[in-house]
Amino acid sequence: MQKTKQQKLMIARFDSVQYVARLKAEGFSEQQCKAMADALAIALGEAAVGEIATKEDFSAVKIDLKIIKSDNKTIEWLLGILMVGMFLLSWKIYL
Image (cartoon, rainbow, N blue to C red):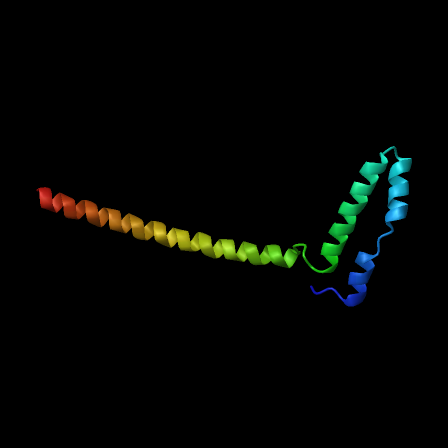
């Protein structure tokens, strides 16, 4: 789902001064408050530009993993057949 410009702006709005004040009121140090405010601002900025994985991203990865899993099963069967063939060939040579 593509975010509209308005949704991106809504996500990006963040009052760090109010956030720091609230954290201070709860007993965090000034340094901790500033670090958490900076980290949250970065996270919200990434969300606004779409750098955070969405459900659709995970669905696509899930489908890719299913394809890889089915490919692995095919390879396992082919290797099994190859090993049986090699066994029968070596058995025929030594008998």
